Image (cartoon, helix red, strand yellow):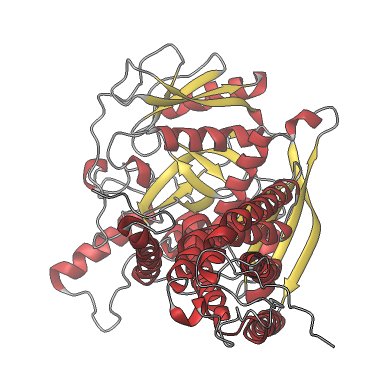
Length: 598
């Protein structure tokens, strides 16, 4: 079999451009389809474009404890602040660290700025309060005013009212059939409550029977004996099923004095609690950790360590609670006025340490340990900057950024058409593909990693237009240089690619490295600029190799370009090539003209 002639491409090589084009087309269709399936068809906008409030908090340590400002403590503080912001019913709020000492909270428009600043700008308050009573999170159904008690039903209602006034709880439902015995938060529904025990003893409630979970249709339990009437009224009026109700209860409980009784909701809003005065403040906790105990069926436990004052207080309160009936044998761990856990106690816990066991996994155990540790953190925060962007200003900035990008794109397209004629269609197709991929990826990154499109990020996308265009110009001009050196147009297409490829790779890699360094060392919205710049530069490499080069290879086989048509952008005359071009592999050399006779 005769070997293929030198200079001719094999059938396999001729098919490669189409495979590359098919690959990038499939990628674009898949990403676009994913965007529509996710329901996020527009990029998430940052505060400077969507409007809202940006609050910057700076950590301050107690004198002599500057080492407390570290990554672990700052991440714990971010977790606490996120809980506060979520308690306001804020959607798509962003809480993140900025540098070593700052926390930035970006809250979208529609939120009360004053309330938000009150919530996020104060030190977290952790406390241990005894549980007095528990009820379903929804308020009890209101009686129909048109229906008057009569007959047997009326007599039963009057008996219940008499029992309520006399404080007799004998007519109240038993703990096993009511919500009173249920003092656990939503994450404990699958197992018994988390019971604090001495660090070297067995959990005190392993044999306790789990009471039935409350149903939404069940009425609120009858008042417990010894509960102040005012506390009962607040508990009955509390609605933990709504964000507003939980936020109001949390704020009221957080602002209450340690000596006051309070009502509070759990994280899920399924239960509401009547709580006694603070028995142990969170500042008495010196350490907390999540540990895996392979000797327990539950596996993960949370250990607590107290200082000398806290150890004595904790021993006293656990001794008192261990003698009480459900639900008063429980203490609530209250963070910023919200109950995060309510374990049971079965014995006096002395020695300055305790552990909480239950239906933990690693994540839930670490979260509770962080919450307990935060009560001992010698950190406070002060506002260093508050910026409020109105929706009108944000929309104007977005409009201005889009107009600037459109103007830049139109100017680039006009220049390419004027200078490269039909050859510019390759560049324009590549720019369109890059724009589509950039938009789709930014829309997908919003829900995936919380990426928000800011004004600096738009600037990065505009700069990327120039970077992408520069790649085309490098390739096009290298082809023209080959033609000027006397090579045929077909040969110039292939010979120009290796040198153009090296230049494009070096240029884009340098830009990506610069974007990575800028992203690492910068803070705030500048990181958005660096991220988009790096993303679009990486997309430029993919576009050049999978779209631009394959299209140029296909055009190299078309007579319109190989003949040097005046509108092809490769006209030898316009490029200053005076000798006639041979259609073979090399250009013919013009013979010197003979002198004419006089």
